[in-house]
Image (cartoon, rainbow, N blue to C red; front, side, top):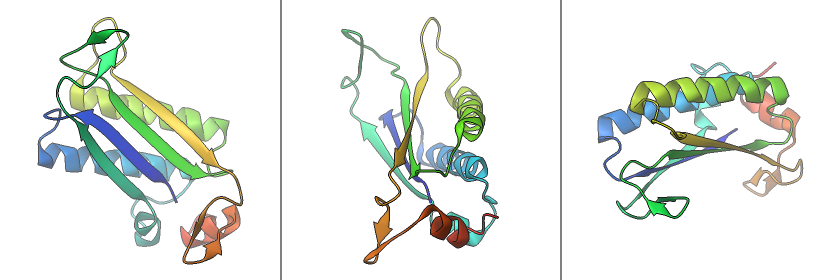
Amino acid sequence: MPLIRITAQEGTFNKATQNKFMEEITDAVLAAEGADPKDPAAQSLAWGYFTEQQQGDVYVGKQNIDTPPVLIRVTTPAGALDQAASKVLAKSVNDIVNDFIGPFEGRLNHWLLIDDIPKTGWASNGVVFSIDDVKSAMNIT
């Protein structure tokens, strides 16, 4: 039940490439959580938001740069990703970003931020979901 937020500078991806990038990141997150990325139930609970920053609005250090890094923020219920799964996700995301935009000379091309929401902090439709509820809804055994 991940929430995936991608922030990139406008023009980093055309729409078709953006769609493919989101697909691959979503599948990587679902796999890291232990879900089958092809499972419709798991896909229905993986929400993604893609936001573009205007050119000239991103800084590294004090410098405004032409090719800023991509920010990938993955939010999951506490317990969805243990340390081993987080490492797998970090490697998968790194490979995906490198495939899409390539490594940057002398600096990072992305940040991956992984957030855990406390066990009583994931709710919808008036119901607070436990990690077991989430896993059941996503067919994770």
